[in-house]
Image (cartoon, rainbow, N blue to C red; front, side, top):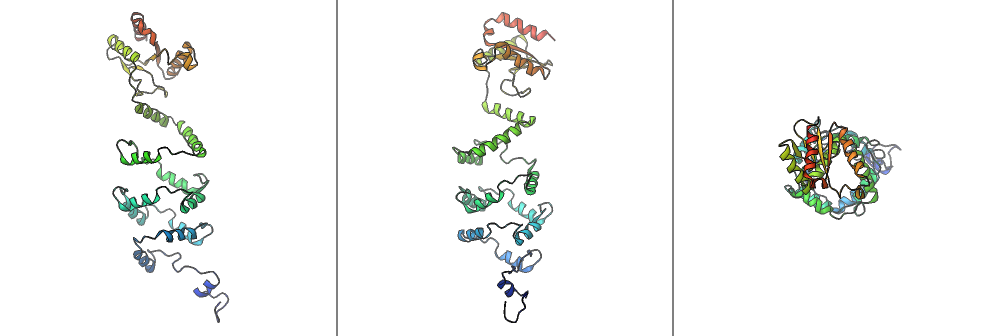
Amino acid sequence: MLKGHKANCPCCICRALRGESIPWNKGLSKETHPSVAASAEKNRGKVRNEETRKKMSIAHIGKTKENDSGRAVQAEKMRGRTKENYSGRAVQAEKMRGRTKENYQGVAAQAEKMRGRTKENDLGYAIISRKLGGRTKETYPYLEAAAEKLRGRTPWNKGLTKEIDERVAKSAERNRGSNRSKETCKKMSIVGKKRWQDPEWREKQLKAIFAGMYIKPTKPEKLLDKLLQELFPNEWRYIGDGSLLIGYKNPDFVNVNGQKKIIEMNGDYWHSEELTGRTKIEEEQQRIDHFAQYGYQTLIIWEHELDDRTELEERLLQFQLNP
């Protein structure tokens, strides 16, 4: 305490001596105070060196809105601000719209600077990881707000592949050979199983898988397709390429002339008891029962039946003509 000053003197020097020094700009913003506005304009575009950023990062370790009044004031000030209700956020969002590392030097520099950083080799990452560890949407309201904000948005890479988009190609190359930890794999498995319960998501994934496999008719399927077109022109269509899923299963042929009928072509080897663990009758019945749930009649044709065309034609005619 300075000589002549009271024990609880509020002057800045006495507060500093008592360890109660408060920054002059605490609680002020460039919108409400000209000095802060002037300082912000003066420092606009200023880039701090690595050493300064490291010192600032160390100085902020352990500070939260619960134990630091400055953080608490800032958190309260920013609460609920979005680009819809706050001009500053709207201006920033518009300013950043469309910027990528390909067309904007600042984003490219930041991407290059962040490349390879992990919580093991970078102090900033370690602090964030420690701070966010264990937080979920259920226990941390800001994560729930962020999730709600992103819900319904279309991912930037939807429909893109590494063959047609350079960014996807770079990401694929960067992640090639990377090994995920057991904990990460377990989390991904839990999330995947949860998503798989959604019928719409599951059907979408199955269709994408089939589309990526570029499935073509097998030789037996081609022979059966040719026979069907001879006997019943334009009555049956091959859909074994995944173009139609019925209860998440993909039949081989479907009637396209108003009848809910399916024909399955079973390969003697691929549907044998040796591979499936089911007898011939069980293998047929499990497909018949599945499609019956959706109102379809199913005829199972085995590969060896193609050798006797006369008998096969009789089976197909009987199946086609019976209601």
